[in-house]
Amino acid sequence: MALNLSQKQEVVAELAEVASKAHSLVAAEYAGTTVSQMTAMRKKARESGVFLKVVKNTLAARAVEGTDFECTKDALVGPLLYAFSAEDPGAAGRLIKEFAKTNDKLQAKVVSIDGKLFPGSHVEVLAALPTREQALAMLARVLAEPVTMFARVVKAVADKQGGGEEATAEAATETA
Image 1 (cartoon, rainbow, N blue to C red):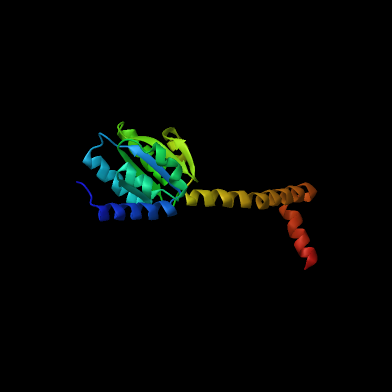
Image 2 (cartoon, one colour):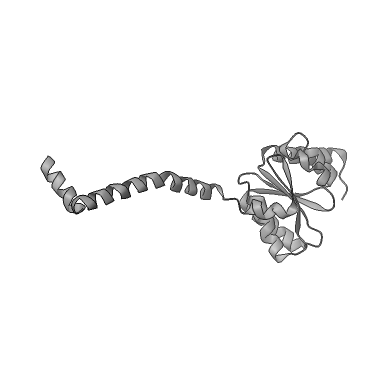
């Protein structure tokens, strides 16, 4: 169905708004994908915070002007669907990678992160990025490690000086 000028402007405005806030973009060829597969992918995209849209490449190129994804303008060729990660940078990569496993017709063509253009093969790298919760857990582990090591050293010194818990109990009674 052909869009009139005002509808095209609405699509460009919507995509431009999403692109200005997104962390990453994956453009994938979808030719040969069934309606049920696309419906399942759209549902999963909504659940994972990914904006998924099929639009003409000329409209997408206009929408990404002035954003970090402007570098993709020349690479937008063929029937593409656009997946923008709004919250988690790796969400779009994980979505495309997951659905490409069961559908060999779905192939990532362009990946863009922080204003840099990568080939579609980088969808693996993007998908491997940790989620926000995983990154926070890793940070907590790194921050807790020095305290843990200090506690181990203190315990080792106490054990070496005379029995660990007994020495600690004696020191506590002496101060009382």
